[in-house]
Each structure stands twice: as structure tokens, then as C-alpha cells.
Image (cartoon, rainbow, N blue to C red):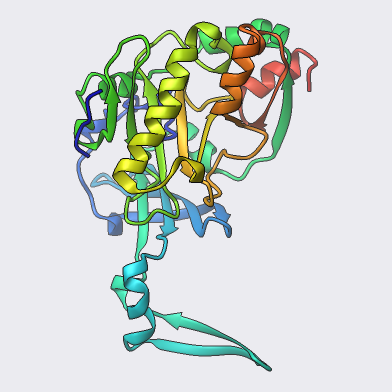
Length: 322
């Protein structure tokens, strides 16, 4: 198998490049050009905040943007400098053997990653807005009568996936590839991982076959493909990053964030978004299930979460399933 030089991104694929300003044609700008309108959501666990901002043009009219600010993970080689370099340390609490300090480290030790979606549509803003979540229990009949027609009625563009598979984009980021058109895949780092530390390691395997939308489409016919993804993906990560397969969580999402089969590889100790039991399905378990019963995922009910503003939730509500 071919190895390539040298991280799922979770994109609103149906909106990629579809906005009034032409998407990729938007001019570069500075963060200081943006004005915060409101906080959409704050995550204490992820040390992140999601902002609705706008950029004021020469005409005085504002164009919406979404800004995601995340505190970057600690990098092991920089930790000694955190205590060694001069910094402001304010004592907050002292009780017996316990002390709490608030530190103000120098800029190089207190980086914040800023991700900007600009121009942003209303769907982008709603995506990051704090929303109630509902659990859906989808039978195979529900899938055929509700979910599949909904998927087919939507204009979900996944051209960005095909660009990766065809080496039209991100070719330099491919960690590994099995080029077989039926049983091969490419392995790329997820954009959420900066590749500076292994604690939040996150890669995604994207299969070459284009007709497999999700877990629901898998049968025993796909076992060789799935085994290749599991074995070769783990081996490639071990070779490149030194993380053994026993320390990797390898799983699929249902529902997926885009309808082209892809598999997530994350560090076992990393509480990655979407790795919870409501949405994650371990690839090894999927393989075992299909080996026992080729139509396993055309028979069993599947549970998944949907946000209150998700159009698919409305379809289940209209059908009296929620």
C-alpha cells in the first residue's frame, strides 16, 4: 500500500461555498475587523466559546461571521517554561496543603486558536447556538420512511470529500492511503487536531467508495473494506505517531455529519466530540455484527441525538415518533 507524506471535519457541507459573497472568494481580513454581536454558546469542558460576530464593510453594512475561540492543549516541551519564566501568579485559595493560583503566562505559553466562518449563513449560526437535544430511536422502517427520504431530498454537497480523494485538495495532509477503489481509503488528520501533541490525537479515514452513505448501508460485502480501515489505519498511526492500536478509539458516527462513509480514530484518553454512546459505534463491533449477520444494520433500531433545530427532528415529530 502506498504511504503519502504528511489534521472529520464536521462541516456544514450543504453550505460549503454557497453564500452571497461566493465563499472562497471572500477577501482575507484581520480578526480586529470583526465585532462581537453575542455569545452563541460556551463550553467549560472544551475550554471554548462560540461567538456570533460581524464584519462591517465600506458601505457600513455588516456581514455575519462565526468565531470559535479555543484554548490550545498544553504541549509537553513547553510545560517547564510555564513555571520557570516570569509570570503573574495570584493566590486564590490556601487551605492546609492545598493552594490555588491564577497564572498569567507570557503569550507564547497561552495561545488561543481562533476558527472563523465567514461569511456565515443563518444555518452556521444556528449550528453553534445552544440548543436542546432529543434522542431518537430509529427503526429500519423509520429509516426507510423518514430518514432516507430526508437525506435524498437535501442538497448535501460533499465535493470537498471528493477533492481529498482525488488529491485536488489537502494532498499534503494525507497520512496514509490504500488506493484500492473498492476496499481502500485515505487517512487524514482531523482539522480539530493541531498535531502538536498526542493527547487529543484525531484522524479520519475516508473510504474511496462513494455509494456508502452511512452505517445503515453496510453489509457483509463491506467487511474487507472495514477490516482494511481498522488494521491499516491503526498500523499507519502507530508507525507515524507511535500510538498503539490498544490506545485508539476507532468508531463511526450515526447519524454522521456528512453522508460519505468515514471512520474516526481518536486517542483513547481523549473525550472527543461525538464519541459518546448516543452516537458512536466501535468499528470492531460493527465488523463482528456484520460477520454474524450481513443485514444487521438493516434490522436493528439505532439511537442518535438530534438538536432541537435539526430539520430531521421535525420529520420524526411530524411522523409522531418523538
